[in-house]
Image (tube, rainbow, N blue to C red; front, side):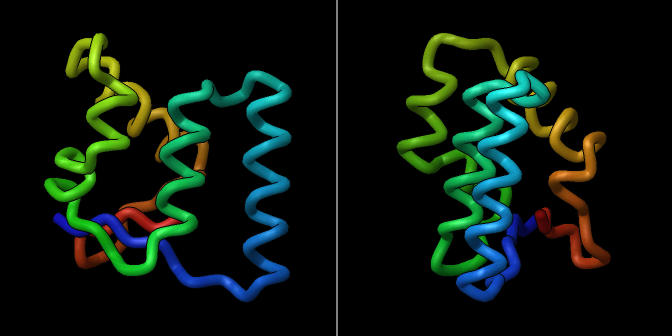
Length: 93
């Protein structure tokens, strides 16, 4: 499975960042979910889900948390429409 983020224009990047910051302030997403969205938004290239799970920042983010927490965070982002699985199995914000 591949995790990918579309490469929005600079204006689009700013808008996405403002939106996810707003969601964090309103407690609609947690700090971990914000970090995931921010890192994926800034990614230079698509990541597989396996690569995401091996990323040092991702490992640090969940170092003391259960696997279920990781799954819940990603599922919640998908359910909120902040990440989508495309036909190739990639996560797209």
